[in-house]
Length: 212
Image (cartoon, rainbow, N blue to C red):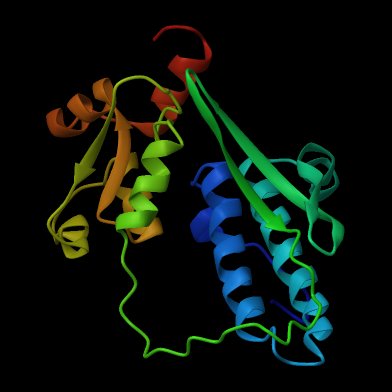
């Protein structure tokens, strides 16, 4: 929220659409499932609106577009045991495999007396599943190619901000903004990173013009 209104999370706009929707849904589902025993769980409609608005603004910022266009692109309907519900859905087609589907919303906000609450001690968040989702999305996080993907890994985030380093290349700025020690990249992009000659904007322009 910013000044009383939902706002986008800028750290996410360099992720794929699939990853953005998946992250918002995982966080939203966690809150809803925690409160399913509450008789006023319907009050979480406000949370759904705030998180959904933030997600749509993040997608709009990523595509330099508008929220209304994101709504038209991704709105969908899903069937639930309590009837159909509106949601937002991103589908990633995969050759020879079932498509990947990320969905935000579509969870009935009605009390479930039989819900089982497993209130366990919090643990440190693992990035393993998150990295797997990024790999399954099948898209280079620099040039958006979907062929020959690899993972570039650094030892620690502090290595991205070494003193005395000149203007850092685009991939360094991208990892620093996202605060991640991994980057899913196309094989050629990976080679460019290790050769110290990579530039994100140049790579994207080259890809769009058919030069790669």
